[in-house]
Length: 204
Length: 204
DNA sequence: AACAAATTTAACCATCCGGTTAAATTTTTT
DNA sequence: AAAAAATTTAACCGGATGGTTAAATTTGTT
Image (cartoon, rainbow over all chains, first blue to last red; front, side, top):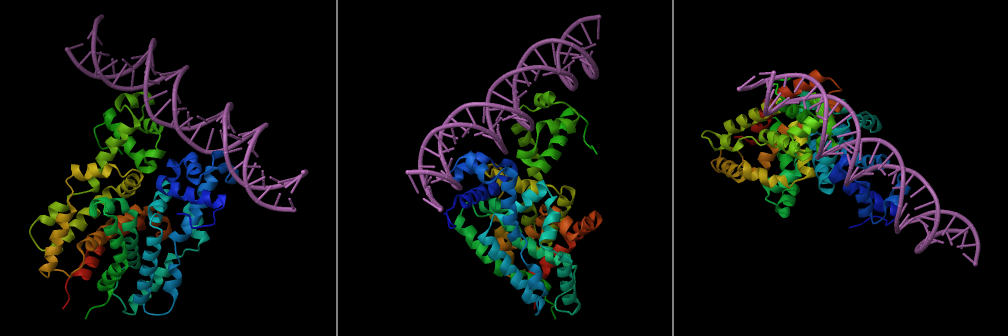
């Protein structure tokens, strides 16, 4: 299961990620992290002084993936439809690799939203630039008109929600059939792309 | 703020709902619930023997709203497009009234998915019936063909996700402007209905 | 007034948990 | 071999927390 270098620090980070992601900051136990890392609690504190520091290390690592470089894709040249397809592809690929991110990020940002400001600054998030680009494409008649925020949220919703609600999908929709669930996720990118394009490309 | 009968039990349930919904099962404190209900801890345990029982009472209450009667709407007569519009309207209306539900349900079901089975049984959830109805409408040529699961998840995603990710929307997209956020939510039903219909109604 | 139920007060218990400490042991480095 | 670093062991501390208890007080009912 371990792909990284097998150093103790990496073992701790890997174990902490697993525990924090499933239990959350409140539910996670330092003892459990130590157990899962195959070490003892004393050594765990020897590497990461406190639970908070360890959590921040994990959270920072994960948050990198949660807000990918949408801005870069949008601000490149080319038709907006192509860019939307690229964003959907990039997002779904990312989420299939790290399916736990949405649930974790939403849980922790709901618990303590104060870190959001830091994140926005650190990653230079500027959604307005994205919205402006979408608006221009609408003005050029590339796609039908609507508030850019709604279009952006529609796309992100269809990408992210099925992963955030994984337990419900898994049990209610796919009756505990992991293969069916994985197949569903694998189809998502194509489905969402077609769905969005059918919804926004100007008909004649 | 209190609309219910002002009995102590109702005060407790109201307070517990607020605390559990924001802090989750792990983060909630019995003392805080007692304080918010304007009583003391002893009386809190006098009414609800344990934290677990109190939580289950709240969870059961909330879960009623989380899985509304989609089946009823879908299985009625009439064109599928009309039913989809009704479902979107019903869902958005519900979520505007109870915007905390998605985050709470997703958090707790991720923490402990074991209760899902009970819920499915208790509410007689049968998504397959919904999928079958969608499939029939596709076969009749009412809407374009795709896997019914994808269509259903697309719709639910666009309805639910913006509420589950409320902190992110609020801060990142709407720069802490509550009015803009509320306006956005108020527009959702119309936007999603148009978006979905444009995406699935057969063009010629 | 008398009784029962609801509520408060305040102390207490057991447990969990994050964190610390010091000494012993093992591993790695020099 | 010697020194340094990593790791273990095991005990401990202090605070938070869920839960209990018993007695006193208030409120509501008959």
